[in-house]
Image (cartoon, rainbow, N blue to C red; front, top):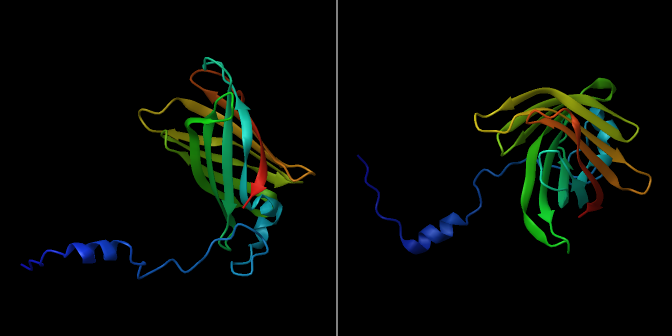
Length: 198
């Protein structure tokens, strides 16, 4: 049985920061006109305006919460040349002076674009919720509603959501989120206004 010699501390520290011998060779793009990144797939045409990073603030409410709240949000859409978007979103609560209080919602997933602007979306959250949503993209608006929800044994009982993203004439991305959870019917939960960021 091979028994390697203990690694020298200096070599251990240097190897931990060494570049990967097999770096991922296919870059992602956050825009539709980047020269170094792949051209977007034709099926992405209805959602090209969403590509990039967006940030802003919003308000949230729900009958089971003790009070309404203000939050900041960052959303990223990217692609690698295939007919789907990579989606990531994270939010954090703000106090009355807009100072961060603590992390809030976080989710990631994929939007699979189909002909005629139809979308099949997979969205997962670290709170134990995985959603499949279906909808469409047309005229600067994406509208996604729950097709199915899977929950881990300890996740809150979310049964349905609806997410709407709308690009306005002034370059703002508005986001609204309806939710049915913990024995409450589908109703308004979140609304935010986001602007493009670098």
